[in-house]
Amino acid sequence: MFWISKKTVFFADLFNTNFIDIHNHLLPGIDDGSKSIEYTNRMIEAMQNLGIKSAIATPHTFPGLWNNTKESIANAFASITNPFIQNYSSEYFADSYLLDLANDNQLITLPDNHLLVEFSLFSPPVDGVMDVFFNLKLKDFNLILAHPERYTYWEKNISFFENLKAFDLSFQLNALSLLGYYGEDCKKLAEFLLQNDFYDFLGTDFHSMRQIDFLKNASFPKKFENKIEILIESNLKFQP
Ligand SMILES: [Fe+2]
Image 1: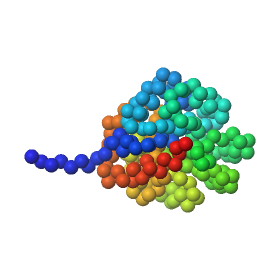
Image 2: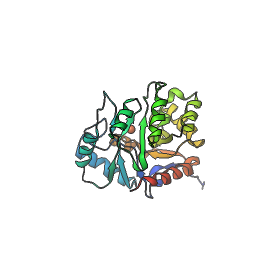
Image 3: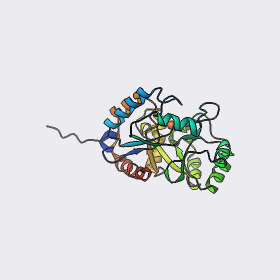
Image 4: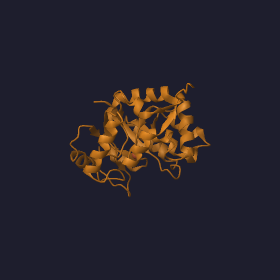
């Protein structure tokens, strides 16, 4: 009889503590995530079955594409009665309009004034984005960059990531990236950034049941287990 050692790990085996998800598209009807209250409730049930304890909803705010406002997001949040979604924020496309929203007190932050920002998946941000980040920092926002591993246009230019870290941005890993959901390049970059301790937080970025099912059935190398456990622990700071 052979002894077969377990060399991969399922996220569901690690979500058994108090994991709070800080990046997802659970709120219905306001972005490319859930399209209805019923679908949101299905997603919540599936996430709870994975062992996830709670979530802060982060629908996109992306001028010209997802024109969400404080009000539209608050209304979508109010339509969900399940306490699994504890609160709401937004995933903001990083551009100069953020300074206008900040000046008008219209940004919805995560706890402790954290602000989740994303870049385009297809082309690098304009140089001016660093000025935007600088001014947001002056206003005491703590910036979190969503899924840096998905910006594979920088996969051969790690210095871009180093610069952002040096600028005090926190990095949030998408769980699905490590499982290969977005392709091999993204997975490799996630592994590199994880191995080299670039990440601060973990999110699911779930948009659909398909993604939840994918995460349920895929595993990642055991050598990253401890680093993922540390990220799950770090997310606890977002609990109310
Ligand atoms: Fe997202």
